[in-house]
Every structure is written in C-alpha cells, then in structure tokens.
Length: 98
Image (cartoon, rainbow, N blue to C red; front, side, top):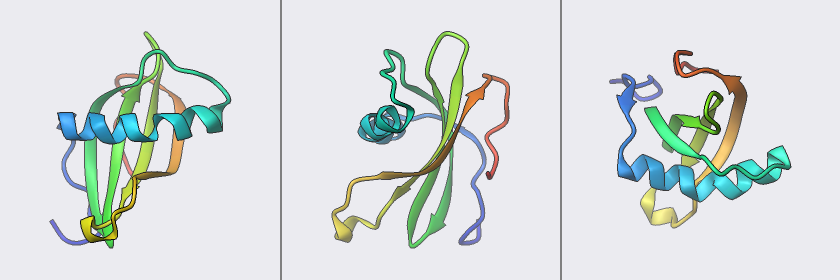
C-alpha cells in the first residue's frame, strides 16, 4: 500500500473500537444527541502524517455512520479527532473515501 492509499476493508479490532470510543463524545456533541450504540463494524486506514481511520460505526439497530478519524503519530501524544463523518448509512453501504 502506498502512502495516501486506502487499505482494504477489514473487520473492526479492539484497537479500532477503542478509537471509536475515544471520539464518541465529539460525535455526540456534533450531532447534539446521545447514542447508546456506538459499535465499530469495519475499518480502513490511510497512512498520512499519522493515520486516518475510516470507520463504519453502528449507531442504532438500523443506522450507521462513516467516520474519518485522524490519529497523530505516537510521539505527538494526541488523542484521535474526527475529521469528517456522514450519517444515515446502512450496513451494506461500502466504506469508501468521502
């Protein structure tokens, strides 16, 4: 994979769920809503000056969100942040660059 390319879609790992959990408060703040469900389903990565995580997150029984979360390089000691997101996605919507 070249720098800047998206990886293949993979099942979410505990590490990816942890990243999703870290940005959940920011997502809820932006949406002005609390979510009981916030489960990472699949993800892709993009290597930049750090890593962009494209994460499909289940936010209700039938609704999903696609997040782009930036994780800085470890030596920077920064928390992940949401770069952008889209809601009203379905389980079958592919996780692509947006």
